[in-house]
Image (cartoon, rainbow, N blue to C red; front, top):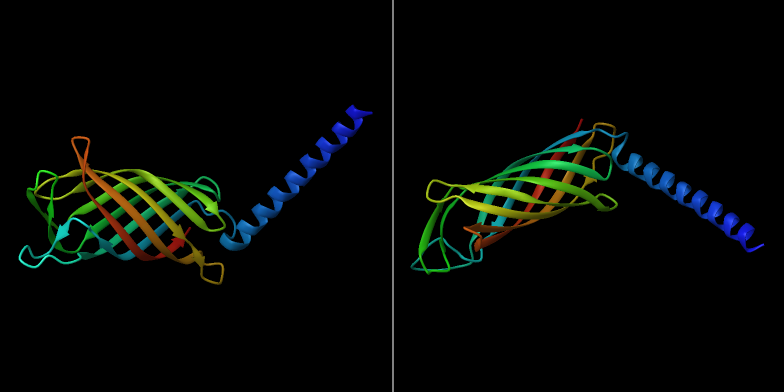
Length: 189
């Protein structure tokens, strides 16, 4: 009798699980439409660099404007890989751990991101990258959280706020970090 009840309970749970998955897939298709594998987005943002100084004589909180172009390839509605590209539109100075000043001029930051939808339309990304700048290049560890807001219609357009944290290091030692907030306009195709 216990075996029969266990088998019935197991079958019931399998049916409930498959129905929940179908409901989740239907909810994603309503939000995204049918799966479109490619997404490109133009991002405008501002980065906060805690160790950055724009004027050594008058140190203040440093907020730098950025512009970016992202490309993502979706394997499913939940998993993607992406390439983020960002250009910092300012010059500034950072103070390293050795108390040396290092000038940063219009640095480019690029990263390859593994992306996962952690909640309905909330996407978490993490990956390695590089900051390229004429004075000194850095390795970058990047983590981001974005929330897509699809624009009505079947066009695949969305508006996406993005919050990203970057830890920039050289020779395995963290040198400085940045926190960036941006707004993107994206298109799935």
